[in-house]
Image (cartoon, rainbow, N blue to C red; front, side):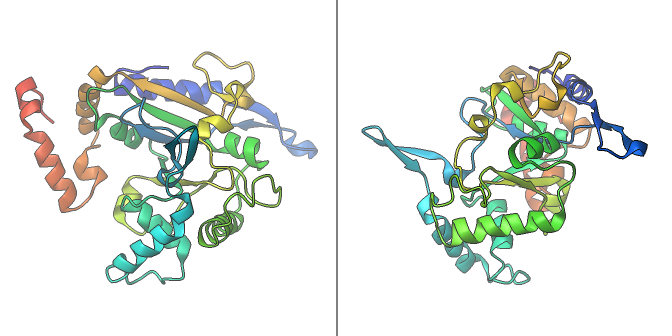
Length: 300
């Protein structure tokens, strides 16, 4: 799947929603025998399709040579987080130091390696991130149907209870990260195996504007694409097995990024929206008057 404009992008998303909307049984209650399943998409933009994968920074693999490899920081996850907390706690005074899940989210927000991966509920935000860097490289937006994903990988049908989601996130944080029980939980059916999707508390306006969603990795530390079979990838044509549409990728050619950014700006999606405050204003002005943009005769 490929798009060359914002309009094509939105049209394709709507087509995918229609393709993977289907009639389904709601159980044995005769008053509600059939219902309509509608996908709930979350999105992630990659500015360099060839470089980035669907794996958190702390779990990306390093080649050690001689056929050996290890996850980049996995043995030091808690060390990294505690070091960040030691430096940042004087600035973040409203979050207790024993609220480790909250500090993990804050660390992710400021670019510290964690086992969280950022998604968004806003497709235009994901498209902006896909087009905002690496102008000479093709970009991509990954789409996940959260409900289909939870049903396939976690045997969850419908909405997940907030209390259960909070418990699962806490379990991963304290057992995997704090206690560093590396690989002890793989294959244990009582422990969360696959990445878990959840909505964090929006402690900062940026997270709110970006409609942030997190995915936190459990015991299995593989790229998300390796955990979902090809048969569960969404397709652009009408689906004969609509209940198998879990994930897909939309490709954006490098030479279309600039035009898409201009279209997004007309819709109010720019640096000053993505990054509220003076940082965003500075980025917006810098981009607006960049020599490359002026040379091309483009404005935002």
